[in-house]
Image 1 (spheres, rainbow, N blue to C red):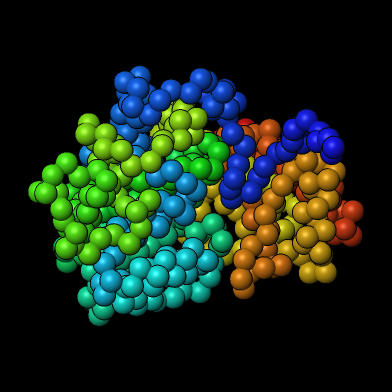
Image 2 (cartoon, one colour; image 1 turned 90 degrees about the horizontal axis):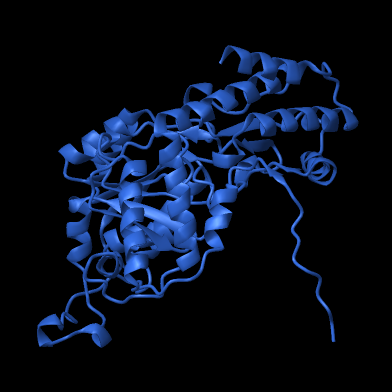
Length: 409
């Protein structure tokens, strides 16, 4: 009989745009005993999680809860629930994940109009507003922080324009929630999808979402109660064309997260413990201080990279604080550098996708991974690795520049 070794993952310094290192307090929370999903002690934790999500999303929305599954499950749940076949949808695309929104909307049966921007840049809000007036969509889908290019899209003017035109706006904030400001109410966002495995520093497996009454009206217009849960003929709404997914049906999920506790699925107990602890830590640190910590470490990282002579990728005016993209120097094998960083130093950074594959490295400074120790470790390791790959650079300059940046922060 084959024997298997004890599970013992290698310790890593994870500096990718996700997943990132998990706070030890979150890991501890995941080890706690399982409670039944309708145990009053557990439903109290569900309610607390909703309260904390409102704080992190900066919203007064009633509905703020996690969808069980990776971040994409949250995106699919929101899109499948808000898009009825034949709805007009506008998707402004400036990177890989805008294309993902387009694909999911298309699978939902939407009539999709896309506008595209060169990767490494974002849209001027007026460009999007002009496209809204031309396409007259029911729904606009946008990525807030595009990790494939390291850019962040301004949303306040677009949200205001959508509200004035009675158009719904749903936003992918998977990469930004908990790391940079996501002002759901102030920016007039109707639905927002977050992720756990990035700036919240919780393992992948839940997708926090929030949506307002405008979005809820669209969701409830397609609500169908499962036949096995109906209590009488009055609940026979089989004539309604339902949301295409049962598991990702927000009209059913919100019944599960309401005081009604209408059974839908078995809640991921340990993941909810993790999310609750991760949110608690965000609020304990304070949103403004947390955002400032991410900016502080970004400044030190940039100072070190520039002192090393490396060239940054993309328009600096719309750089995403928590993801830094570097052009791979000419003649350097980018994958060989990544492999040496991992094998020799235990550090993981990322490559990119599509037209940027093999052209840039992406460094994440997110959540628990966003620390002075990690930034200095990475800079020293990257310098040594590049020298081993034949790159001529001023040895020692990167760490000194980063240290100076920290001293003046």
